[in-house]
Image 1 (cartoon, one colour):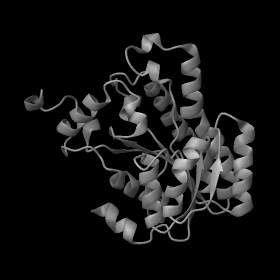
Image 2: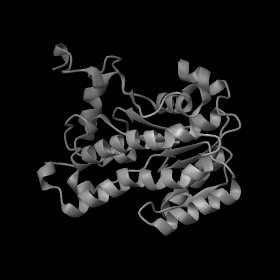
Image 3: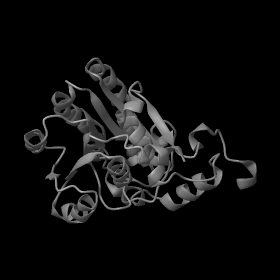
Image 4: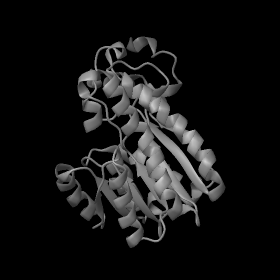
Length: 270
């Protein structure tokens, strides 16, 4: 497989990256982190709260990292402290993986018509605006040598997906933010991109109503007749963070078995 070639090539040897949003070993962020480590990158991680820190520690250690930072992306002081500590350890940064999103689970079912103002505000803040705050702080560490800011989206940003609701709106805002940041940061050689996997069996997906049905539907109907794997998403991230991705920016890269190209599923699967 192409991603296996990239991983074995040491495509990220000598590069340093910050991975934000690993919840457990089934997280998309972990798939990306492991692929980047296998490709030779040195990694730092963020987490929020003691519980997630305890889950993250053995994973970080398994890829040779002892660098973990407790960060609340809604708190400027917390972000400042984390990036200050990052700069104390590393003079430069080559890539950031932003895998952070949130919406109240109780509103990830039913109708978007019932979304509360508070959940809308919080979802957009954490899921989209936080990328700006992270990019702003990463910028000085990347300005001299260039780098990559990479985030995660989902097809629900552009097409109605059952129960995705306010997260679809937040991901649409995130994708637009990626394009504007790509233009802002491009003159300094900093690339900003999004990977958009199909449904995956993660903690985040389990919060969405009807998630298992969505997973089965895309697995059955995508052109490749399969949902993506963590390894496939990780391989795409390695490409985007490596020198091979030097002229790719502002993009939404779909890693979903091709499901996003369909207007309707195969008739025999209806």
